[in-house]
Length: 249
Image (cartoon, rainbow, N blue to C red; front, side):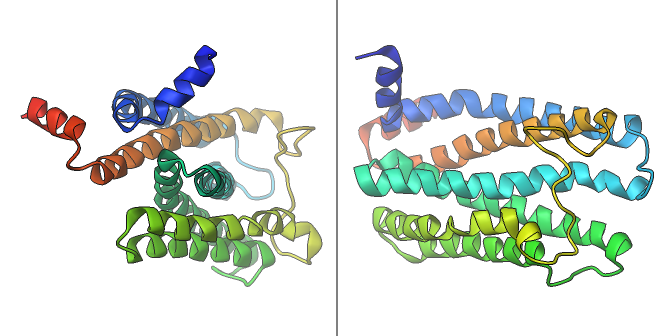
């Protein structure tokens, strides 16, 4: 067995995952917050005002990373859920459900910052624009996953039911992504591209990439911490949890 395969096999062990998450989640939180702090500093004090939108465009540095994360986290949740349903891997159930709350939080931030940005640009806090509407539906899907998971007492049955909803809901992601091109929309088209030339001035991009990196790394910390807590709840009563609790006391 190769070292990489062996490591993934070990990671599926609840005690090994607990030690891994306890070790690395604080580091991910700290690095993620540091990257976001540096990105916000650049966004507020280094980048010049936009020639059309002035200083109001600076909310982009929170809105865009949150929007990307809202979709990426849902896709990751569906991915873990699919693995859990096919191969019955308990850790993947835990990781899938741990994605839901941070993903919902990113979606709320996306909708809130979009409304704040939309007020000076569109003259209204909300419009039933295709991008805004589909992002709101994504929030409802996150809340549905969270609600379904906590509505069923059997943790494994709950994770399977909520995971199935996540897998079905992943079909919404391409609709969100392409909504500004498929329908007439107030929402602007893509100005920032991972591949190809962005329409934003290059001097405005570095703080954005720091924010993107920071949100990703912070999410890893949140995912590990939440999954560790759920893993401990599921394993309560096992010898390794009792030994750990005895050692802590």
